[in-house]
Image (cartoon, rainbow, N blue to C red; front, side, top):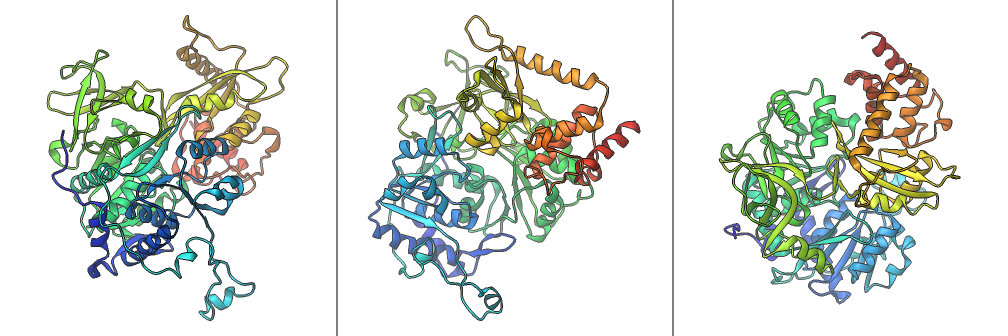
Length: 617
């Protein structure tokens, strides 16, 4: 088995970060906040005192569900440094899924926003139940605070304010490498959720691999604004920065209308590495006219593409336009973050591939489990010290993918004669949309709980920007008055926003094969026919714009009017705006330029631009 030659463990790392030489060094920087390593060190040591007061011991599981990014980062690292197992639970997670996770995980404690305890009052019964609350100002004190004449009044019973009065504690002298560092739950149905357990050995050995592959030092500055409740956001951001005593920069969440500002951040914050998902690169490629020199600074080294498949055409076009190398990383939540790397070194770099394994063994096997020769497709298997311990309380699922130390990835791959690996497909039925993994069965399960639904099926269709889009096809009861928007509203009540179908189609039946399974190829053909029929009809621009807006912003057509703007439609955010534009483009068979897209701030403007664009062809 291939492993890193050496790596720093949690105890050594946090002792090193506590050294006087790191006292004023910057750890995390946002548009409005800066956290130093001295502040991080004080926080985790005061947390040691707090955790001791609650009688927590190494390996106890603690749920973390905090909206504030700074608190999420500091809390995660405090748990890690003290040998406690963090269970990251996105605050956006819906009720039924959260309840299932709590029941499965049986945590000893919860550190979460106040609303969490309102929604799940049973969480107050855990050994440690800490409610995260912001500082409160006394009425009329705001201006005095701004003038420096008074201090905020804090709720000293709330976290993290209660840490202020605690003395600095002592960190563990040793944490067992086999102790689980954190658990991330993958997308899936409530009956098939999988909690990926990553041990301290797995985490820290892989952090060593990442730091060596990327060439990170104390001078590195990582731009990573991915979601913290996903592995690539938390691990390849603040955790990797802490491991290398470098800086993690998170200026703001990714928004289409702030792409220029994001690229300006490369120079402003002296960024050396930019961690992004392919969808972000596709949007930058489309909407960043005039920013072609953004990566040509004396500090910047390369882009790191993670989370989902990087199309070869996008890879080439982006690299040529911006004159920058993109390192393509292949990995899973089950491998911490990575495993195979195309770049940055010349000997591992080949566009269109996921490169070569680093500190891991890889092989490709057929259905019989036999290794196949170079050039022949089969399932990719991985082995290394960064492989997960297993799925929490799910031995059957663990045994299904972990066999004799080899992780069955579910991805189909080919190895070239010169040792490069190319991903060609998937065995697993997972949709990767905008870098987010979605199990279509989870969406189908939710839709089927609606009393008016007879049956449904959800699946992915190819998309140039998002990689894939989630589509749901539904059969309703004969007397039902339910429509697509009603189903969308139902999904919004029970699913996270990123899992809501981009389109819902109603059919009288779903075609099935002899096995009784829905024939997805037939359904895709039906949807293509519907799209073609819509494109061939005489254009009614008002109707076209309203229908596109209705689908993109998830509101009824009857509730829309031409004068509506992004301020009057609640669902009109950055990503929904892109969805709206793409729907218009597909309906008209054209492509808007960046300037046109940016001024589509009302339905009236969108219709006018669409008319003018189409008539000028």
